[in-house]
Image 1: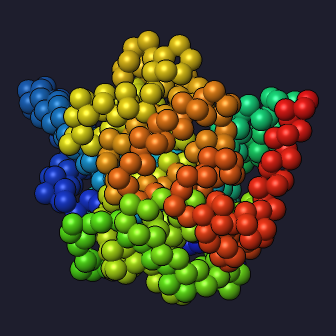
Image 2: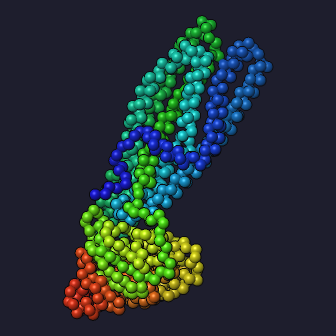
Image 3: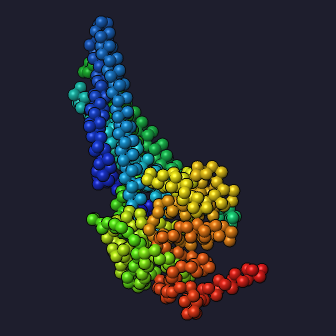
Length: 596
């Protein structure tokens, strides 16, 4: 069985250098700006380290000696350091945020482009809500890593080592004594890292689960309300939401515990400095300015350590999200277009299936040894019981799936040697369940194709009788269809899809049960539109209502994935086979409905 591309329950490394390298590639186009930001950060760190040392000089050389003039000049130097540090910090934050947003933009574009190029089997296996999580919240989780995490982690490390270096330069023994509590900090950090890692992996898993649940049940809200399932759905949502809240509480608990521990360890270090350093000042071994500088450096020492724990939080979230994002990006389409596809010039619309076998999973074939020839301009109907393989047959023509055996030819050219764009430019599909995008009628007919002018859209809408249904379209082609076409009737949505197909002017048209969900009056209007649409095109019609396909050139009867009968309506009725049985069953149903 094929697995889904994500495994939310799995735990990877707390730090994965391979993932970090891939993430850093998105910063490569902005390396010049990144180097500038890094340079500004170094300047800011140096100025930050200079502050306590300037105070030490002020105490030892000027305040202790009563040199007011020298103290005034040194105060101006200190003020200048503060001002320059302010602008350096501002420039660093702005640059890093700008770079981070650009990198996230690039990553989103890559993910969305990749998702659009994946084959239909991917969407059969993976919930839409989780895919949305990858494109949105998982990428947003990388924001702080891109914008501030990468560079400021280096900055914090530089600050820590810089503080230790300055302290060692001033007084080695006092510096070593002030770092006695450091092993306690290292131990606390290790425990904190392990616990937070687990908590954040669970949080990312539950966010994806919650998004998938919400997306599915909001899309299916009419069914939920119709079957009075609100309480059950609420209960399931409440359970997932409660689990997510509890995991957040656990992460908050670890942070709430860790930060006071860092403060306590910092206080211990400061107490050692005051105890030992104060004694040395009394003894005259060190200056009072040195004690003050050490106190300030020790306070500064634990500040970047607290920041690093926050950055570890960012890193954990980024690792969990990047692992999922790159797993999605590493998911390969089941099949790809040929490197040098054959071009179809002067396309006529001839179709041939030769010994085609297809299975969605392994060797469980749903189409078996299909042989079928459709001449250019011919109108062919495909009928059969539910699950017989009718829609699958047309999906193969559109290259939504890849057949395992045999060949499909368009104008004598093997389908697998053609590009998907070329195939779908020649074939239009009208589905029973029409999907419309938010926007106007015109937007949904044109689908962003600038080559289709408004006049052509209007002509297509008129030819398929789009304005004849219901109250018509008050705003014409500018009528808003609502989300998924919710503001239109079923018949109007169907005619919009007809107008869309007509505007794109395909050589081959596939109607997949296009009239099975409408009333008789609407069906008559749609049938007129269908006749307009079929003129001069190779047409494949899939329909349950056999009355709608009497005039086609031939009818193909599918049964359990095999072609069992081919012929005209009258020829198949004369055979008294599968088609005859289907017709009799439908005819009896119609007679019964008339009698009622």
